[in-house]
Length: 89
Image 1 (cartoon, rainbow, N blue to C red):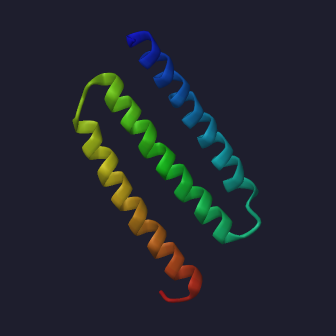
Image 2 (cartoon, rainbow, N blue to C red; image 1 turned 180 degrees about the vertical axis):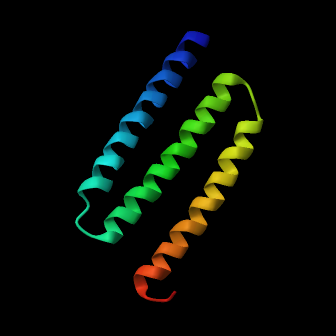
């Protein structure tokens, strides 16, 4: 059973890394600023997932706090950029 959990963990981790690469490619190729903002938000969400994977692997709960703070800062950043793109700032 532990071997199955290890396999699922590895597959999930590498899938997240591939998703990060694809989101980064979209960030570079995005024709508009809104596309780039969405790609950047996607990369931060995937980054949070990777931090959680590292937390599980290392057995350290403090990394979950880091992921939560990173998520809050990401949310505020996306809201600020969206307001800027609308012309509200």
